[in-house]
Image (cartoon, rainbow, N blue to C red; front, side, top):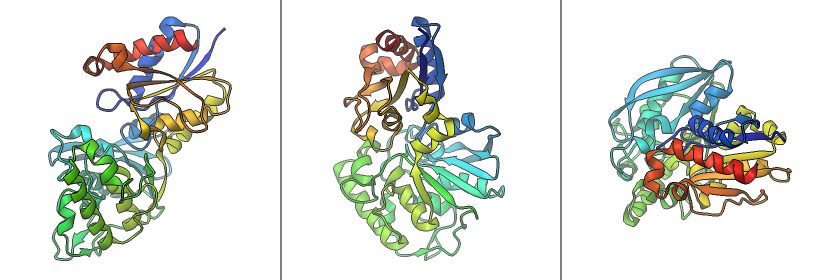
Length: 366
């Protein structure tokens, strides 16, 4: 019997993009079950791979260059954005300010300045609406770097200091030179529901992932609280802590709206409709852990399968938690690190091990 198989992974961060991951899993599946029908729908949640997923999903999407912009550690990187039909621009924080772009971790000094430069480039073309993908950031600067590139200044006229720790030294802010948002508004795609501050906030939860020690987390927390006191807005909004607090920065400064990035991209790629016709649904990401169910791709994809008569599977580089979401189908799972014998081996040749995982999924779920 021919099966309808939907393969909808996130990127395997730092190793393989979502499209290549989906293709490798599909190749492995077809090596075991060559007559099944495969639908590849690479996903993203606002973080790494958002531009790729939207470009592939939306007819008429055009990738534009923003030239050389400042990366998270000050080195230049190539900035890009997507222009959609109807005057919408899409930018991705991870593409210019993401953690994999760092030569070494710098939790106190990493900045989102380059994101602001890409946004300024997109606005300069006359776009009417802006979508900002948040996720995968190297910094915990509350979006101050990006807003600085867009004209936010200290009351003294000076640029804002780079990095999260420098926010504590700001005396007052001047928003008079801040470039206004486009007339059609700004939509943030968030991969988390965390507030800016507190035990579930940007510094406490995600700072250690960016190399912050306990003392540095406390320093960043105080700096973000100080910045929020100057900029205003509501730091308790779910998602304000996204991308090191960049969600908060644009909520406060530009009155942006915010939605689940995984849901937005799932709709753009047609995933909900494809799932209803599927016999098997496979998803995956680099690391499956307790945060995967809080707005990230794997959790959202598995929720689409809730209540449907299909088999589901998760392929992850590392499995730190059982792939089971609230109100979702229990999923078969496989770790590339276990399959390859070590994390190093899996990361050295991810396409090979994703093909192997696809073949094993076909044997187990086919």
